[in-house]
Image (cartoon, rainbow, N blue to C red; front, side):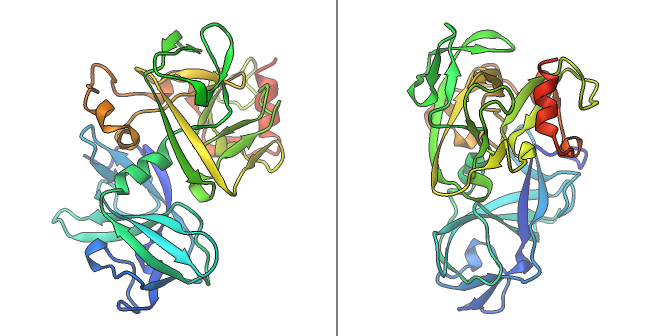
Length: 336
C-alpha cells in the first residue's frame, strides 16, 4: 500500500483530543481505544471541535489505510477499526460511534479518531454505556452502503414498477447499462435518520423523477446530459445525492427512523428508481461486511469482480455543483 491510493470513502471524524472525559475514572483523558475505556465515563466535545475529513483507502485484502487526499492523518498509514460506542446524552436518543486508530510503521498508535453516526453537540454531556469490538466493521459498512428507502419503486424487466421491499432475489430488473439482470441479493437495515444516516429527499420532478425519491446521502444518481451544462466534457454523470441538497427541491430528511434497502447484482449496475437512473450497491472492501456471512462465503473475484463506478460515467465533485440552480441545470441538461 502506498499513499498514491485514492479514497474509497471520506468520513467526518473528530480527533480523540477533541472528545474528553469530564467526569469519571478517566477524567481529563482524551478518548482512547477499547482496552482503555471505562463505562459510565462522561465525555464532552471541545468547544472549538469541528468534524474533519478522513479519507479511507483499502487493498484487495480488506485492510484500510489513510488516503492521500485525507485532511487528517498520515497518507498511507494503516487504519484499524477498534470498536463501536453507544453514548447517551443528557436528553435525546443514543448516539452510536466508531473508533478508528491510525497505526505507525512500528505498530504504535499514531492517532485515534471518533466517527459519530449521529450529530454530536458542543456543551452536551455524553455517558459511555457500551463499547464493543465486533460490530465496528459492520457499522461502517452499513453507513457506506448506497441504499434506497422503503416504498421506492424499482423498474422491472417488464417495465412495471415494484416497491423495493417487495423484491426478491432472482427478480429480473431493468438496468440502464446491461439490459435485464437478475437480482442476487436485497439487504435491509433500519437506522435512526440522523447525521450520516439521514436520507436525502429528491422531490418529484427535481431530476425528472416521477415520484419523490429518498436515498442514502452517498447514493449516486446517473444523469445523461444531452447538453453539457456543467462543463464536464462528459455526457454521462454520477452525482451524489448529498451534493445536490439545496433546501428546496432536494433536502435532508432527518428525524425518526428510516428503512434502508440495498440491491446487489453480479456487478455494479444502474437501475431505475422512481423513473430515474440510480446505482445499485457498490461492492468494495468497505461495504462487503454489510453482506450476510452465507453470501460472503460464496463470493469469489470471478463471481463478483472488483467494481468500478467510473465505468458508468464521470463522477461529479461537489465543487462543480457550486451553483444556485445546480439541480435545475442537471434537469434541463437531461432534456435538451
